[in-house]
Image (cartoon, rainbow, N blue to C red; front, side):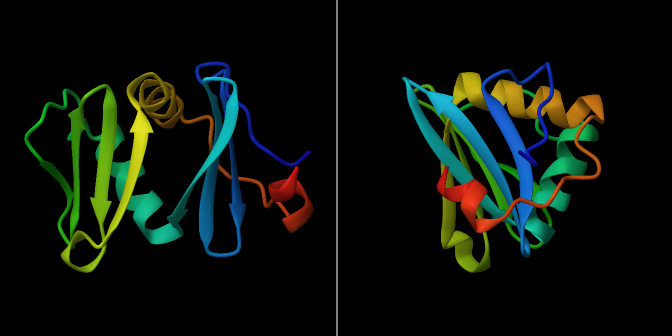
Length: 121
């Protein structure tokens, strides 16, 4: 397997597929994927490491000047991005904590490429 695993994020694995970054995580016994355009991932990674996304609440917090925002509501973190925030990811709060810990650790670079077969597994 080509996935990157980080001890701070035991339920997550990270990889690149084409121009996307894929975060696969296990939640409630089910594997789920988050797919973010690479440029969005870079902005999110930079914002997390700079401490711009630390304590989220129900109010949207901007994290990308060109249109990225985040909030935490009902136990989930919602990421909005893209033109008029037309793209959104909803991530369980416990998984978000693992993802951001992995981001801050510096253990994700470089992300390995995963192929279609690995995405289907």
